[in-house]
Image 1: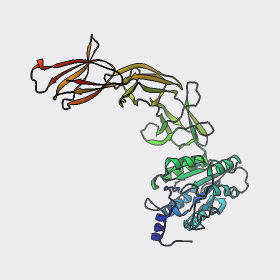
Image 2: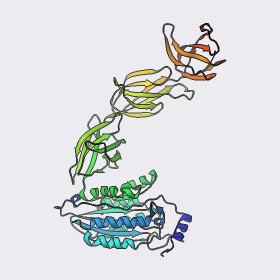
Image 3: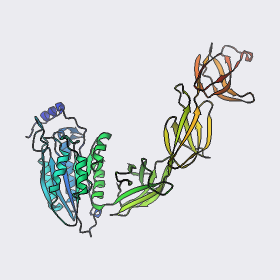
Image 4: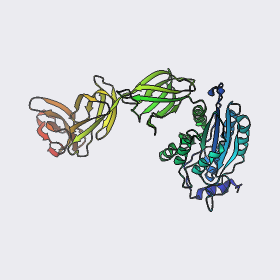
Amino acid sequence: MIINSYDLRTSILNVSVRIKKICIATFIVLLNSTFLDLNSQVTNRILFIFDDSYSMYAPWNSNIKIEVAKKVMGEFLDSLKNLPNLELALRCYGHTTFFKPDRNCKDSKLEVPFAEAKTNSLKIKQRIQRLEPMGTTPIAYSLGESVNDFPPKNNCRNIVILITDGIEECGGNPCQVSIELQKKGIFLRPFVIGVGLDVKFADVFACMGKFYDVSNEANFKDVLKLVITEAISQTTVQVDLLDLLKKPTETDVDMTFYEAGTNKVKYNYLHTINHRGNPDTLVLDPDLKYDLTVHTIPPQEKKNITIMRGKHNIIPLDAPQGFLKLELDGSSNKYYPTTIIRKSGDMKTLNVQEFGKAEKYIVGKYDLEVLTLPRIYINDAEIKQSSTNFIKIPSSGSVLFNKQTNGYGSLYTDDGKTVTWVCNFNNTILNEIIYLQPGKYKVVFRPDYAKEAIKTVEKNFEVKSGMPLTVKL
């Protein structure tokens, strides 16, 4: 069924019970042949699984998704036609049966069987141009059917690139299917490219294959360059964040790759340990040298990194870490101070940490300035590998200063020997609440209307942890 009216298509889409996140995966790259090892006789076979479900009629950027997909996919296929040792094929789903009144969960077909890129790039482009979105999204079924799409062939690498407009809609389990077919050697870990997905949808695709999120038309080129680099040239990288035993156990931290010697950001990744217990594989352009910053506290850096083309590169970086957790002892009166964290002997602020929250730091010693009244200073707090340093301070007490009139005054600690300034009053507030650490204090106050120093009021009081107190002036 083909719907000729754009207005009708939009109207039906608006009332459709199926609401998807905008997720189009189309590609464009002007791919240089140096991405391939020209001396290699290994044949790379790429099967595109293309989503042509009904939601591809949804508006996206400058047009509707299917029209953007046709345009950019066509340009991408043109860039592949002269690459050696490359075969292409196309499977589509959601393109033969209208999704109402019933979904056709077997609406998936191999439209263009494998052949050399120089002939199939045009055939696939022409077939995509004729597509009209109609049906549903049977991802698991399409992956399963792809077993028969790869005819027997020696010395080849089978690659799947899934172009999807949403998540599984037919009750299948794409992750399970993908894992089983990878174990059987049918294809390598698939690539899934989508746009505008929530985090929960990204997690769904991550278990199925390598997921890339495309946020707009403009970054299609960069995304596809990453995909092709990993799929064909296999120039891959893993960053080993080493603990004190030189084991790559540290993870869950942001990493930024800069073009060496510049401030030009090339890639941002959140480091992770994959399902096999190893640092996850990344793809970097092998034509550049890199400076790497790992955003631990404090950051760790490595300069002038060279990537070897066509190989799996390992970048080791010392990043042993432990935790610091700040806690309040006793009830808090809803007052939670923050703490400035610095390296021991260095006044540069590394972090401002909240109480009740554990933060990771590179192993070593740190100076803490707790922003209570008065300040609490803790020097040489030690962070040890994979352990937590718990630091407790007493909860502050709340003191209500009840002023009969506006005036000027200050608070001091008073231990009977030394009087030390803590803070000044706000002379525009009659009833001022200040949170103070437990201890003995002195308040000095003079009403605004009293122009004689002898009118100064002086009172001593004691603050207890978590307890309220009223001081009348």
